[in-house]
Amino acid sequence: MSKQPFRALTPRIGWAGFIGGLAVGCGVFLTATSGWLIVQASTHPVILTLLTAVVGVRAFGMGRPAFRYAERVISHDAALDTLRQRRTQTYRALIPLTPARLGRRRRADLLTGVVRDLDDEVDLQVRTAVPLVATAVATTAVIFVAFLINVTAAVVLIVFAAVAILVGALDHALERRGQADALEARSRMQRAAHLVAANAGELRAIGAADECLRWVDEAQRDLQDATRRQARGRAIGMGLSLVFTGVATVVLAYLLFDPLRRGEIDAPVTAMLVFMPLALGDVLGLIPDAVGALARGRAAQRRLHALLDQTPAVADNAHDCASGLAPRLELRGVSASWTGDDEHLTPTELVVEPGEHITIVGDNGTGKSTLLAVLARHLDPASGSYLVGGRDVRSLSADSVRELFAVVDDDPHLFVGTVRANLLLARPDADDHDIAAALVQAGLGRWLAGLPDGLDTDLGDGNRGVSGGERARLGIARAVLSRRPIVLLDEPVAHLDTPTARAVLDDLHAATAGSTVLLVAHQAVGTAGAHRIVKSSQARSFEPALSGRTP
Image (cartoon, rainbow, N blue to C red; front, side, top):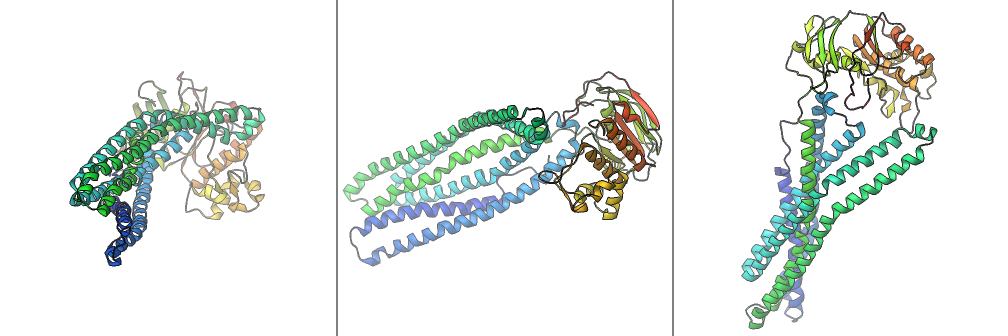
């Protein structure tokens, strides 16, 4: 996925963990010193006898929040910086995998899965590495001080720490066992919520809204049950930590009773040592949460690597640029497969001359969308050769070939944002005049004139909605604005009524006059305005990756 593998323990995280160890160490010594001070003060000594302990209590009391604040600032700054880098790396790794290597994952599953997995992975720094380093630093310091005072106390604390580690291992095992159920429940919940949110209007129209809301409710209950089962391991770990804290305190008090009675150790020091397991219990209590985050983070890493370490569907080893080549496309016996097993595009011969408008018609499953994927360099031919401007595409860099194409699918995505922002995706350096001209060419001149804020009108959730025809025209406007010499359209009017579809296609051919256009359709209306019609009749079933639609 990245040349720089993820590291949970970096120098900054290690430094944050050390400072965190000072914070929790201050807490332990604050409790222990307070115990010494209380018992010593009960004997009514000279006030100067207590002065050192009073200063120590104040120092530990002020040091604990100060060190904690510093630890949080350093650790979260490092983790957020890591998260930024990982998200960028992941996005770049996903680009060459789209769409062939993303399988049949739904967009909601892919987006939320990757986002949550990245969060869980980076949590290995804040929720695992920092607490464990802090625990190790504080525990070592406490045991060392106890050893200087009383060997028996040090041995008890060592055994207590070892038991806490075993409890953490148990919690880790229980957390891993519940991972699969929790992930499956989360996935079902996301799918149900996305279905309802994305199709609310249609579901209400057909009277299915209540039924789908019941699906969401059931998925939510399943997720709660899975989360509850997963939390049992953490609860068991925390409970056992409290039990063993009490046991260690009682055992240490019992073992120190005889030395105290014989005068080998005085009462204030005994109180200080007995308080140490109580305070150390809070420190060792961090282990169950840390190992729980470790289980989640390791599982997230495995899922991310399984997704991102795939071999891209397009080999991109060439460095020659396709810029300046004539927009002439030629397929010589090209076949292609999304899976590497079945042929989703049988050997095909096709020549597209510059400026030619071609409509490819055929039934579903005949390889039309696979053909467009090959042309757009989203999929390598399994056999044959594909030439652009007389050059085999394998001798050209994939990015430079893709820059020749504008692609419009049957459901152009509109981002929540202004009309201008949605169009600038096609050409970021375009000015308002260019954007308006592209909208007019796509048949949206009157629509633009009627917008309350013109190009600054917000589109998307909670803002101005668009009809199916307007959405299709906005996709065409993007293609026009991009000024790419070749335009590929995958059933752009599939969801429109016949009059609207004809109007959209008329505007399409007028707007792209002079460009090379390949339009895929399975309706007769899609042939209007084409220079040439190519029929696709191969009997092949194919389900595209990511979207789950059938061409």
